[in-house]
Image 1 (tube, rainbow, N blue to C red):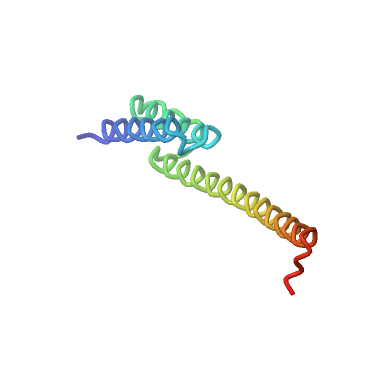
Image 2 (cartoon, one colour):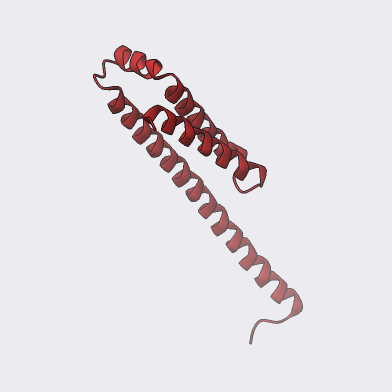
Length: 117
């Protein structure tokens, strides 16, 4: 099995897997778009290797595989940054919601006259 066929199969499997996760509601659309885009690009590069050679020639990269590895690392870094951003945002929301619940619980206890003493 050539690298070209293996790459195309991997891209198709990734595309189907991400699409399946999105349809089941496990993966939201805003995250799925990025993965679908990358798997589509990988499929194009696997089916048409001269495209990768042309891009590497334009950018001055001697070996197309090096360009592919570099692009993959950049993609993973960007995904990591996006996940970190979302995690930070959700942590802040959870903290704020926990504080609101604590204040509402205290207010409810005061209204009931139950000071916990």
